[in-house]
Length: 388
Ligand code: NAD
Image 1 (cartoon, rainbow, N blue to C red):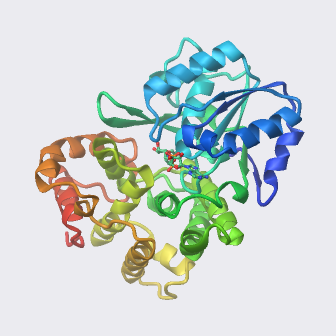
Image 2 (cartoon, rainbow, N blue to C red):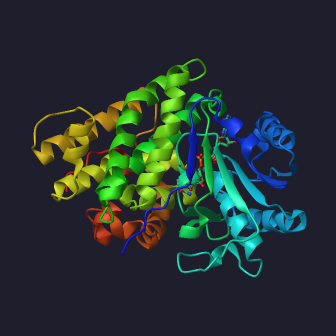
Image 3 (cartoon, helix red, strand yellow):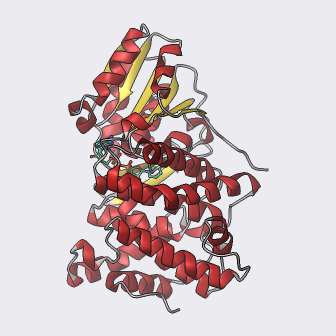
């Protein structure tokens, strides 16, 4: 038995006007300090107030949100007693909003208690997710990723009940997204699409979503990166790609690029999308070398080949990933993150432990043995193509 979960998705230009049609009285907006400073949070607050809502802003979410932040947010939500929780921002505020929603509904729970078996029984509030980056797809998934700052590790969990009620994907919110964040988040969406398609939990419902998302990222990311302030079509398509990829991987799972990327990003404090996409071409090569994965399908769907040779198609896909990463000036080795060899060697055991413990490790199309995992990290450090 399997489930397909999706929020109601409102997308395209002017989709924010949907906020005027929401029925309710008290909206608790979870966002980050930058979006408050840029006036984005104020704009959403204004639209809700015009629709008759009393609002409260919790603008304290940091990138890669911590357990401490969501605990504080849940206390504020309990004091305000909203009937809607609004997650406004990139994956960080949206994930924080999901955890706050769960802890508001079930105050006896901590964020660390949320898991697919927890019965959340939401009854006090519903949730709207409004992405301001085009990457994580958190607006459409049941996943929550938080960071345990003491342990220096990411902690991914979720529940089918935690999928937002409504996702509003409006391109006007991403036009001013800086190119670096556009690249990081857009490549995150590509990593979701590819891993969602090749992982061992892929299924007939998720497949089409993942393929379409990969096609959109290859077609529009470079445009959004180069001229995102003026190219509304590229912004719109990247927003759609991220949400579709979220629906795709959210209803299948992910793989090794995420397991390694989470581990690396939490240890060295690097942005999520930059980390998972760093590993994507390497783990794709590793899978192809072992005859695993369905990468040739993706290569054919995005127009790289018409040939049915799976391995040749997969290798063309790896090259296309690397070309796109170059076009958006993405670092392609761990060394290019300016991490000294000694610091990397010191961290290697821990990086492998945390990658192996990641919930996405076991659904990779080819699961490495411990020595292979270490070697993979070392090759990515040096930027060497995978030959094993
Ligand atoms: P983010 O939310 O951390 O934001 C990155 C930076 O971009 C922040 O400084 C933010 O203020 C800024 N920003 C956001 N929107 C902006 C805008 N429109 N204009 C200018 N600046 C803007 O980044 P992210 O990559 O979207 O999210 C990463 C988080 O999402 C990580 O914690 C990751 O683990 C998580 N994640 C969750 C899921 C899921 O399904 N729940 C999936 C993937 C990643």
